[in-house]
Image (cartoon, rainbow, N blue to C red; front, side, top):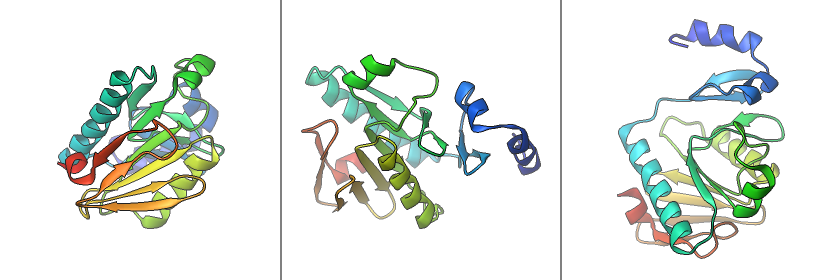
Length: 182
């Protein structure tokens, strides 16, 4: 998948079922075809690592027995996605184990939004997670120092100088927006 022609050709022969059995790194299966995820910048990877570290540390310190993942594939009702960071509850871990592609959205998902990401796509992806078993989605906007938190029933915006707290999954976790983005 080095050039666009090659990735376009692959989408003609790659079904969602194919992707679910053998997800290719840095891809998602969206609206009928295989899509290459945008290359992550150093800032993106740093914030992704911060989220992983803080969620994992909280999980471990409180003996919650869940798991935290980076770029892990899951099925939604209509697509195959790979959220930047995802948290899996111990209950779902027992129910499904750790398949190569998780069969639903993860309870807690974070997407780190690049300045070039179209707003409609980011919102659509968030709603897709929530309609497919997700409980909470964090949209992290590094350039604006914003985090938008969404659940099925609410949308909250946290900015620089504020503290964000989980609402539905990984209950009790909180972190300053500035610390998360540092």
